[in-house]
Image (cartoon, rainbow, N blue to C red):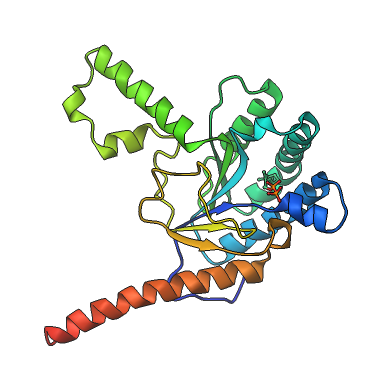
Length: 248
Ligand code: FPP
């Protein structure tokens, strides 16, 4: 267990793990080496999150747009994800980690789909960290799929269109039941969401870090959590001032 304590620990941290390719290029290595090193950073981050009591960690592992990359890179990334689940599932289970997968499941290769479902089933009763793997995920695609199910209910007369609320939309998203991310981190210096959790990010704090994902460490993660806590502390100051003003 880590001895680090924070004033506030976010309940849900989501990470856009960017910069694997540039990390490799900087070293004259093939891009796949960056992804490989990125998996080590994933392992360290999952442990670090669990150690400080984060309840949900969402990792953007493969976007619906990533299929446009060269075939060899796509197959490397899929291979790494499969290997991660095969090799690390028992360990995650021992750490009481629950795995959930978000993203489009239709038309996925059956071997990868079976692995993802098996990971969810095996760990479904675990109660420490929930590791949410965003795989074949795109936020607009997720929202369109949610809208389709709502439209189908309206067409079938099960739902009146005027009864559609944000809560009802929320419940149709892949993230149903998962609280919105308190903090979204993106590595590699890029400062955009890239179709990640657009709906869910309505009130999230953002931290953009210059380091490439393979260089991400427990220490960098905790530094981001300190920054997050200091942003919340300012909000605490406001509450204290209000309390002083009413003489409490
Ligand atoms: C972005 O780097 C990273 C990805 C597209 C994939 C992230 C995947 C992993 C770290 C490995 C598998 C995941 C898990 C959960 C085991 P990039 O290739 O876009 O980097 P670049 O912008 O420098 O080219």
